[in-house]
Amino acid sequence: MTLSRQKGARGEREAAAAWSTVMGVQARRGQQFAGGTDSPDVVSDLQDIHLEVKRVEAGNPYWWVEQAERDCGGKIPVVLHKRNRKDWLLICRLSDAKRFAQAVVKETPVLGPGPVSADVSGEGLPPGGGAHGESPGVLPVQR
Image (cartoon, rainbow, N blue to C red; front, side, top):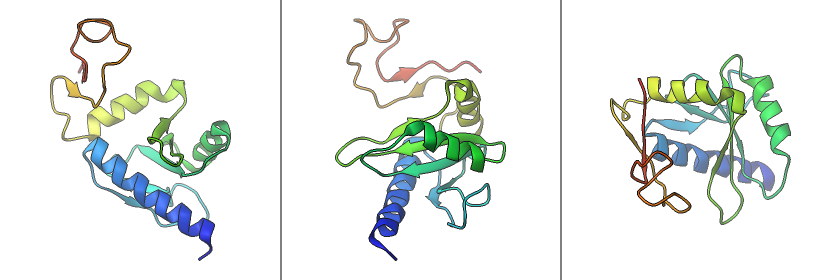
């Protein structure tokens, strides 16, 4: 395996571990064939979401989303991107945001009813919490 393929595989394993931790679901590196719905970069319990991983310092997020769109087979195309010494980013089309949120709420057993705990610092929020006065770190969920 070449060094770039090794780095890609390592990035996919890192992304799967991060996704699993943040979303509270099982995730693993997918079987890598030639792309497509049968071979996402990360396979997760969130079956309506197609995960493409980019563990690179530079690149074009629009190209990455377009690749995820081609390969998603009707699932929600999502890109997980990370640069060295930076946090993972989740990239999706704004037009898919509501569908993404619905899939997460529907398919994530740890969410349950009520507010969703989020790992946020609260920086940049108005005094007393979020935009609607809720505490930092809690996102209201409407069911």
